[in-house]
Length: 80
Image (cartoon, rainbow, N blue to C red; front, top):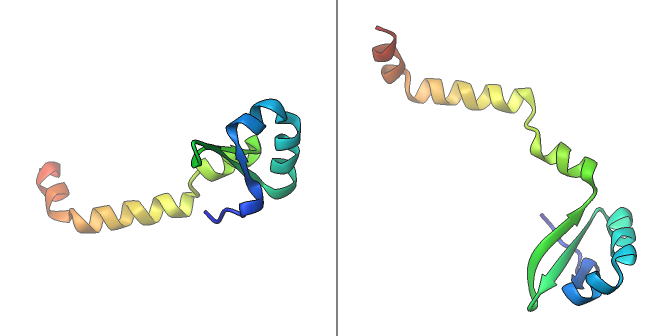
């Protein structure tokens, strides 16, 4: 994930100005909240989080085919 340095916010600023930080996330897609100058939290729109968690059916099918091909002998033994 690429992070724009303009979207880095301290935890103190996020606590004091959450509405502004939420607007930043709406405009840019994501805001990284820093704690002790290290990235600690990521604020993103809920719909975007759901979309990033779901794997497409094609991805799942490709992984399944690869695992079956890699472990074909084990599957054949289990099928007996």
